[in-house]
Amino acid sequence: MLGILAGLDDGSEGDVALLGQSLPEMDEEGRAALRAQNVGFVFQSFMLVPTLNALENVQLPALLRGDSDASSREQAIQLLQQLGLGERLSHLPAQLSGGEQQRVALARAFSGRPKVLFADEPTGNLDRQTGERIVDLLFSLNRDFATTLILVTHDEQLAARCERRLRLRDGKLWEEA
Image 1 (cartoon, one colour):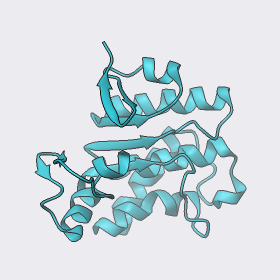
Image 2 (spheres, one colour):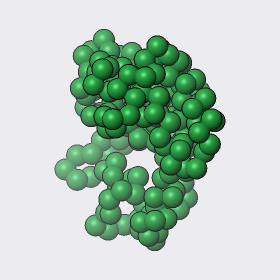
Image 3 (cartoon, helix red, strand yellow):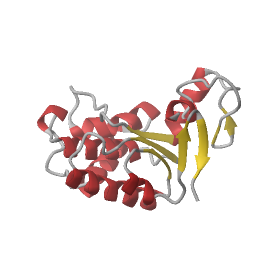
Image 4 (tube, one colour):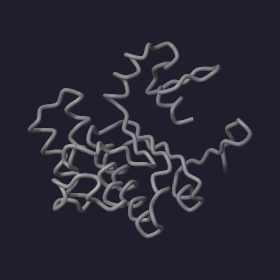
């Protein structure tokens, strides 16, 4: 579902609009450009580049968008410091705990100041206490950046914190009251 909403996958029928643009009517290059400028992702498995340190992982999306090295570096450092990782900038993902890796992934997702952030089970691989801290950070950054957050979770407590809840059941989408 997230793949279709983000224009990574094609649906079998119907139309999906992202930021007012019909995704099925766009070619892959157009969808990629739309995502690069407007979308952030937080994956359950973090998806950090193992050969890049924390700072480089966070800086990467901005560099790929064409931002300068200096501005992307400054923004990445600020985000990592905000998430309590100011002392871990030069650490590779394998040198970070699961919670630290997820915070790097959050910083990377917000580094482009996305209009829409897709989060797929962002606490699925974390212990309860670390997961709660990550969720608090996710919602805090969501407010600070005025981002639309589309979150997939099986965690009922996490879902309860969201303004609007939809359930996918038997291939149909249902809104909860």
